[in-house]
Image (tube, rainbow, N blue to C red; front, side, top):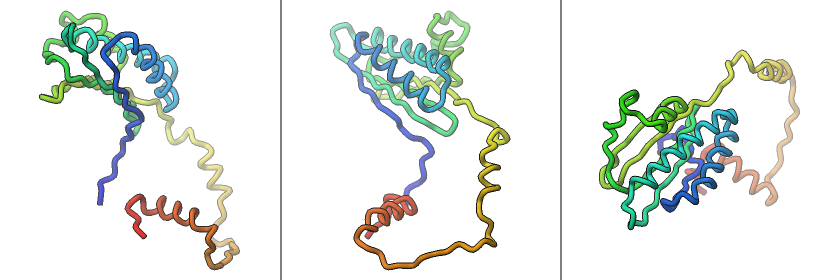
Amino acid sequence: MEELSYETQLAKLTLVADRKYLPLAMDFIQDIAVVIGLPKEDAQKLELIVEEACLNVIEHAFDEDEKGNFEIIIIRKPGQLVISIRDKGLPFDFHKIKPGENSGLGMVLMNAFADEIHFVNLGREGKEVIFVKNLPYKNITEFEEVEDKQKKAPSAKEEVELTYRLMTADDAVSMARCMYRSYGAECKR
């Protein structure tokens, strides 16, 4: 049986290492961040640091005569939005980037706007910069509707009328969907 995954890859963009494609990708990233619950202002800040990381790839990861590309991967984890920028360009010494020591504006912004930053050397597979942004959440006490629904739910003592009948061909799709939701894709005939 497969292990459950608590993260969902929302999108994966592969872009040619050229500045002209960045505005479209950054708008896409900002829109996804807002859709999953990041406030617009935070989504704009996240877009800014992702753009800075992408510009670093475009300007420094490939030789001038080399045509390269890179990936932007957007992942939703419980309580977090994770954005990864991967390339297979020239190696980079991430140890040279230390907060406060000769940090450029881009690095200062990255540290200010991301909750976590990870620099990963992938060996022959290239390198990766990962930004983690925590999503806002509500305290459980702020969910009044849960309490209201519990008050309206029928009690176990109430009688509920059930009807039993044979399945028909029209029930097949609904039954298949029910089985899928109950048992997942592993459900066999």
